[in-house]
Image 1: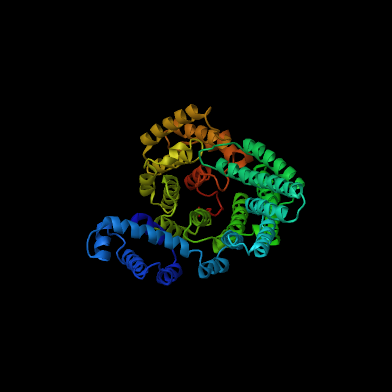
Image 2: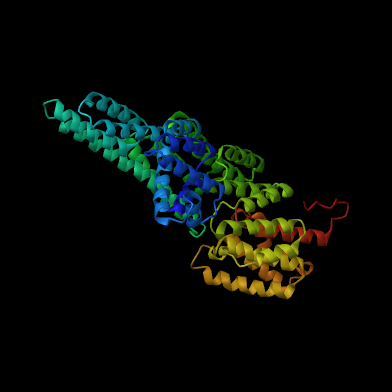
Length: 507
């Protein structure tokens, strides 16, 4: 039990703990109970790593595990109770998202009703409390609470008015239930879309478009039947995603801006997380368009209102690292990357594995190719992403081997890449660009990866990669360093400038 108490204490702010200390002694059932609970709290705060026996000896002067477990259980419950005292609820109203604060206040008022209803003299006051809750629940789309209150009002008023009003209440309850179903369906569409964003999904744009079209059509039908700011919000978010996957990036950005206006119009759906999310979406689309300054501006706006220390904040910081890398701000990118590793708030291997690839790219562009290769040679969970990150890792490893003149190793890795691509073609979508890159590396293999021997002028594949849109490199793909641009820079170094022409910069 003491571990549960430690867990909940870790969730409390300093102000929560300050209020808890006062609460324990103010509402003790027996003269010594509050004192014992206070002593246990102080011991847990001062010595967080002791075991139950040690805490028991501190509190009782001897080891009494049975009594200690009972005390721990009572303290745990008192901590939970303390979260609902006025001073803590007020802090939520002042500091948290407005929607969350209203939800807490509504539930508290409903609990007050359940306490008062036991008194035979409280009928009028009970109705006032229920109607107060109903008004807020309807406004902020808390349909489960609304149905609960409507059912209670049906009981109270039908009993008192001496006439059958069940039909009226039943119609209102039925309507609220239909709204709740549509409301939950909106969340379900959104959550299903989020699951498609998993790096393991490997869905094509066409498959995304098919899903999003179905989602938007369903949400549009619900929105036409029941006006709901929440349904409108999710419809707008998924419609912007549909536009993005359809290649209408500028229209998708405008739709995100419309979503921001919707959030500002309806207080019940406006949360800092949702606003921050829209700024992130706009940043990612400007990034996709190659407008890096605009992308950085909206990424910083998103981070400014995101909650520090959360996984969401960490993912936004990782995007910032990628932006800074492409902007050439390498030292700043490295600083943020180091901070992400230190904070370590995202569980699992995937997030850290993507940080490793960014680290390798940073090492590569500053000339520390050996260190980049060491990082890339580490086995990681990214191997599960056959068509994306794993392909990019293999590609960058080949670049490192060519830079280090390890041609035999590069040949072996090319053969592995070729077999890997052939083996996975029917499992995941291999992009046209990646297929062309494999062919280009095959051409380099034929000349022993001697770049100076490569006949770039007659290479159709090389020209396609550099010039044709369907083969071209884009911001935001796992291939952090464009292979064709890197090769072109090496060829340019080999050729040197034309007579009378200044040598181009490779920065």
